[in-house]
Amino acid sequence: LNRVKQFFVPLCSLLHLPNLTLTDVLVARSRTGTYHLEEFTSAVCRDNKMYSVSAKKQAAHNDSIWSVAWQRSTRDNCEYVVTGSVDDRVKCWQWKANDLALRHTCEGHQLGVVSVDINHSGTVCASSSLDCFVRLWDLESGKQIKAINAGPAELWTLAFSPDGRFLASGSHTGKINLFGVESGQRETSIDTRGKFIMSVAYSPDARLLASGAVDGQVYLFDMGTGRLLHTLTGHSMPVRSLAFSPDSKMLATASDDGYVKFYDVQNATLSSSLSVHSSWVLGVQFAPDNMHFATCSSDKTVKVWDMSNKQCLHTFREHSEQVWSIAFNDTGDKLVSVSDDGSAIVYNCPIV
Image 1 (cartoon, rainbow, N blue to C red):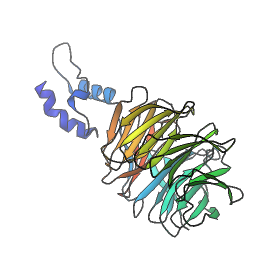
Image 2: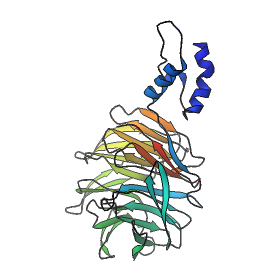
Image 3: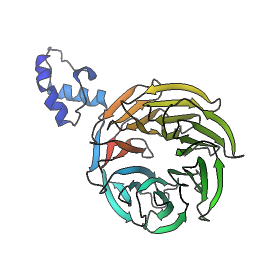
Image 4: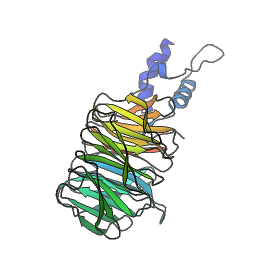
């Protein structure tokens, strides 16, 4: 066993598994009682499931990247990754051959890009900026489709409705603004009667809209009636990210208090509360399989979790600054993260 320990560290470095410890793996032992490198390597790969970096763009932008989205296009079957940065730019990348290939740099915003999202058909991207504009971009051509002037303090993070007809955005005034994609106008506003809305999310079945506020309050609305259904008060600090499970039954909320909380949507009851990072939790996303989720934090890490037992499966420590946003691909075997360090990193995430 001592001989195994001697080559364990360099082997993990070779396999790009710097976070692995000897207790994490099952060391294969032959009938003769000796340990073999190939047996050990096989055990490492099997037990660690090869969580690893698939691609890294070290300088994806010239400044901090605050948001990322990933979607497959129904038009050309391309996988698009969109990033939005404090450098005022939106970049459209194509994921192919295990690499992020820059396809378009979309310019038009005059101040930093706060949020990006892609419609469910993977054809149009929306970006929101500190310049108070929402801009819509065609992902295939990279051309701007529309520019919507939201007005001062009326725009922050945004989310496409599941049918792609509306964009929901939080505001500094405590309202959720709904913009028509076709009309380019604000169609309606939902007043939470609360404080600055920092995060919004639609349920996949389009029945509900959730918002998270700077004071830790989470509001759940019925989109059929526009009525406030529930106010969830579990957090004590800003809620920067929200995500519904793929079956629309669970809502995950991520906060500066270091916790991710899971709520049963039907009963608005707290299902579980996890202290998942050592600092602010800036993002939470469910995997498409409904059995896993991922988180990112200002502690510079990205973590992948098992939903059933709430155990951490792997921690990525690739960023040198806080990690603002994460997104799974449509199959859940890849995960992308963006950070204040200006990089975009895609991970192999073999959870399926």
